[in-house]
Length: 132
Image: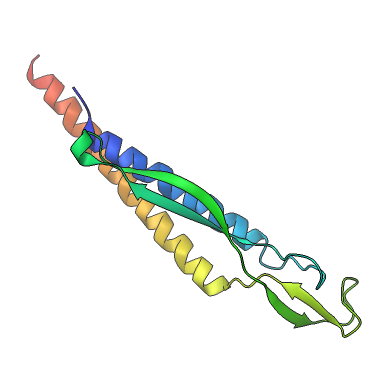
């Protein structure tokens, strides 16, 4: 017997946890400054793919945790020790507002999958008690 509800919700929880980890890493590094001749911090992105329900498996899998290759943004800060001769440093080109929105979406989606998992577990437990 397979527990499809539990399996599907569990795979969703794993995917959203991976996304939450990536977002947290991005937020932690949003103010990481580099010199203009160095590569700035690259935003982590999570690639998720649906499983093949025709093959008997449902849910999602994290395919890859990649980096979004961007040039960063120039910031004028002549007092920074990494500033070039013109006073510029490079900051990651991430938007805190977008990251905060993403973290809310990922957290609520994780919570929704957790609720589905708990309801499925309760249903299976009740079904097992029918035979007693």
